[in-house]
Image (cartoon, rainbow, N blue to C red; front, side, top):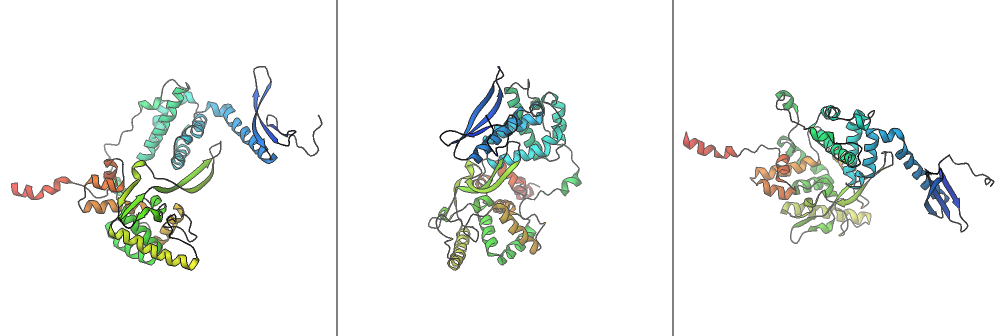
Length: 399
């Protein structure tokens, strides 16, 4: 059969794209040869576009190359990356998967890239974890490796999970001077609070946004996800149902293709709640609503409808986290407050500290911060909690 004029020959094992008698384009992927040497092809596209048919076949071909590459299959990192992209990605939120890919790219791949599955043993994994300086990424890397190695055992790629024999121990002794250099105060430091909140008068958007964070203890993603229908001024109740987050997509080789801001569910089920609003919080919302109403009349845009985002951009659309963070960073720099440990999450920590200063119990603060565990709330608080100090008057009576 003669080749059609202008038709280019496709690469070997590419697949097949053609138009059938009814005028539909067909895309067939080449899956290799069967036991008798006969070529195996599978239809993966049926439609009206030759371009889409070609793209579908190319995508299938690229995926096949990855899965059939001998070096990829034999290497520890190759198998782990395949597991992450085909299994792990479908079991966690997009933002969580991005964090896991960062752990893989920053710690696991650089250390194990030249090793095969059989070479990765207890000693190798101990050295890998020891090479990670900070506690949190070390703990999360071990957790990720443990999940993958359990998968490898299930698939009979290895006989046992070597990381189960490894325990991460905290250093019993640590250089006190080095420890003092570490930044442990998580809230806005008391000496900067007045300066920060006074400076906010210069920016009505940041003032309203940061005061909502300060009076509610909400995460910045939750605040940017608030809509006017979530605020009940009659009963002074704030409903936290959603939060903005990132949706990240990767190609079959693990390269990030796109990252966009979306409105999603809250961080966890415990984060979803109805909270009481203080009078100051309610007044902050009302003041911002007045500002948005005036702006809306000038622009002929409704900024305060039930479905409208409370802290939308000037076009009435949902703001991004990175854009909002940059506004705060520029503001802090302009007011001499950069490098003072001030950021959106520090305001949430400050909310918890203020409640503790007013002698709220850990469990009541936990309810307001919506942590699933009280131990998380204790870690959040910057101020020291020493119950024995309350006994000072009694000890004086004894001695």
